[in-house]
Image (tube, rainbow, N blue to C red):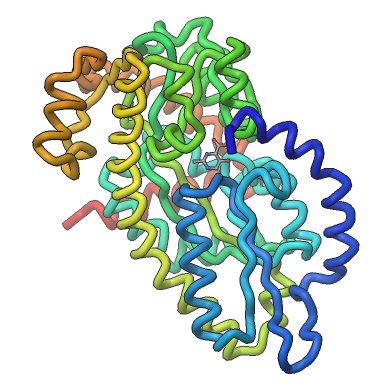
Length: 385
Ligand code: 6CS
């Protein structure tokens, strides 16, 4: 599906959602009809087919259906079929869905502490350190306590990769951001984060970003490489900038009443499956960034488009064959690679970002400072050998 068509599709779906809600009733998945009818668990994701979240949900479906010997059927709803991220959370709370992805960029409106994952330069640049931090039992349990009053059960927190700015000019300092209308997800902290750089942050649902860029309503957006490719943002921007400021974090959640009402053996199947998914998705998201950079370069080349990359793409290009590397990078006249930000340049962004950290005790809800301190402590623990 083309991204620009998603908004129209969401609008058309309003009446269907009402019918869907009526049919679903409670929170426990579709009730077991009889011994031969599998129970249906509905799992919505915030991304299109072919995305990291889609791969996660499909693997979850495969493992759950296998481990429940067909007694449970998992239906996966890609983005654009049920609504915006905020609507998905609402449907999860109401029990129309049993599982959903819920990213801090959206769920942070309702659980302000979760916005800690949106603070720039907080997590490590080492994805392996972040992986340990995000699955840490104390971190998981602290955030689950914050999910509980919202009727949600936190199942996992994981990274979907380094955030990359796609814009129409080079940005190497906060000054370059002046006047740049930067699309952000819809939580308030992101307005501060990009405001601190001097940009004009513009909240917008994911489905509207492509047309927003195409129609110059916004000048840039930020997402991991795989998402840029899936949503075709590279078609409507000419620069990809790897500032090394943030990794995209998401969470997988269940309706809490549904989860608590599961028989203990089935709950264990879910928990074991989710635990296994951590390694699966970690490796897969790295592969996706590499494979999708290749697709972006090929697509630009086939259209004679110009692409400027600011940053090192050596790690991402590791999966390229020598022939692909030559054609798409070393001998590609349409590609210009400028050096990554120097430490001094990055420090200017870091200084601006830290002014937002210092506001987090106010913006991050009652327990904001506590969760910020917890993540700083864990980052240090896991970074030390
Ligand atoms: O930018 C966004 O809105 C979205 N980005 C990703 C990578 N996943 C879901 C989210 O809604």
